[in-house]
Length: 476
Image (cartoon, rainbow, N blue to C red; front, top):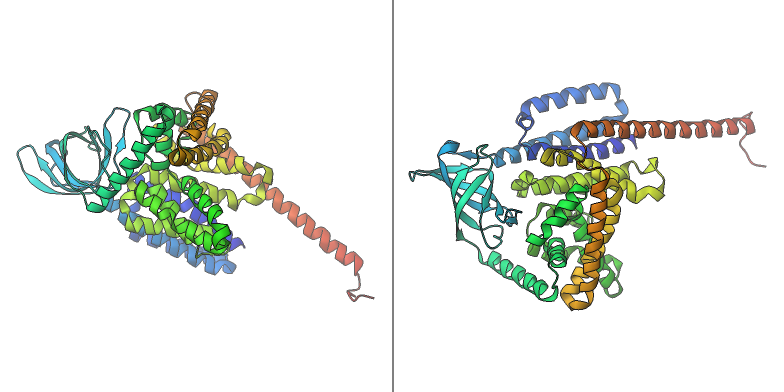
């Protein structure tokens, strides 16, 4: 029991930590030999003082080094290296890792897998890594498109500011996907007259942003609930749950569960290879084959490793970091479930998810909003019903449009209330102090729980000794 606890705790803490280090391009992932030596020393010392946990120690040591080496390889592959110094770079070319994302400035953000670079005097050279680019484009560029951009690097050298963009090639499959997305968007434009409701439906179902979506995004960020609007496991679970409900009477629960998990693959293909959707889809597939108390943790770890191996570019995405951090918080919530009353389940699940995403939030935006702990459960419920109304609006039109507009206004009011509680958010120092309080409370509750269990056990043993003082346990 103790061994499985430490394995689960290591997974839910270690995976988000590796994603965080990789997203920052940390040099801590560049020393596999030193790390292997350190792990061997720690494992040897642990074996001396914990003879009963040999299997757990060996398992943890092996998993730690394997994950460290894998994430270190992916991080190195994502680092930008070009044949010329930054001041000379005038053009880059490569392949889009994800669909382009509309920014508030009206430009598209592209995450480019570099293949070559050039200078203003027509010199050409090789390039590698993942480089974010800003370009003025009228339409969304789908993942897998090969593009050529002319412009210059930002003064920090971390962003390419494009003056012009040329699409070199797009495969037929991606052209078909782009047409399918255009058909869905045109239907929403025809059925939903209100720009705000339409933008919310497109954002929740396809991950597409329009100009009308930015006010709601800013309010969700100010209230600490930005993760509820991003495509994630919650959105995929909505489709899986609906399919399971519809197919169970026809196929039975066992077959319906398998079919309801596999069919959403079509939705993931349509929405695109967004890291959070890939994570959710991978865990849903692993849930079909893994069983036991550690199934969700091993599925979480296996999905992270497979996604890192197949799509190393995902590690440079903040969406991937937030997705794995939030789900790690949910798993940690289950791990400490014996420390709290069941009535507080939604609030505490939200607390762990928000706490696990606090460090990435502070790194990206410089502040963290704690009110997300309180309003995220309500926001998640509203988002669930908004997705249901969006699907109904797509299928049947006007009858669900009114409900969608009401839900949009409810979300606006909720996010506005959350943002007004602690204006400006909390700094890193505030978060560290709050984290110390949380850890102290958990340790105190855990100690009290163990003391209570020991007291009950001693009381039971004393009762047995009093009743059977001579050791005669036979019944009359």
